[in-house]
Image 1: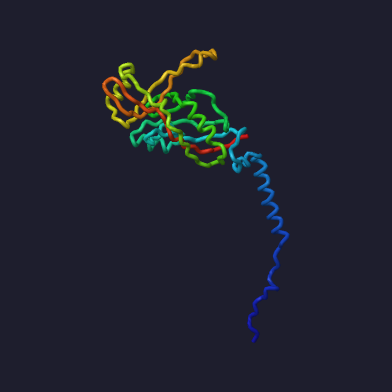
Image 2: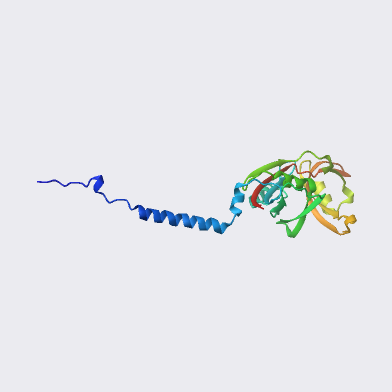
Length: 232
């Protein structure tokens, strides 16, 4: 009696290379169409930020006690608020790469859960320039920490009695190392024909105080940035 005989390798159904080739061609065509639809912007993901580009930046400024002060991150803001800090939520910055802002002060709109409307937060020209120059050489989705040198000009002596009642209450309750929230009035450049005034906020760290005066550090020595988009 003859037993069952398996088919040999040679007798198996041959590979349909024509069909496989058609499938590969279709996949490649779909990839080409997707890339074409994206234009050339996807190539920016592979590039370094350089002069001539503009960059979309997420950021967090931290004070001398490493507390977040102003941030684009909802998670950082929520944690900071839970820790009892004063933290403002900001929008992304869009900045030219490696080009100075040529300004002493730049105000940015921010939000705080205890303030009903958007208010303005004051950032110095040096802080803005630290981001504009610091993003140079970064790639999209790269993180970088920028350290600013100590600036004695950002440590101020305040006469308590000249400030409003809200500030005086803050100072009376605060101890060295605590945050204090300061409102400021910025006078626009009169030489440029602009005489308007703009109110803004900034927080500081209380260094010391007595009945008449308080020493406050307004410097933010650490800036954390992330490049989220690079534009030609």
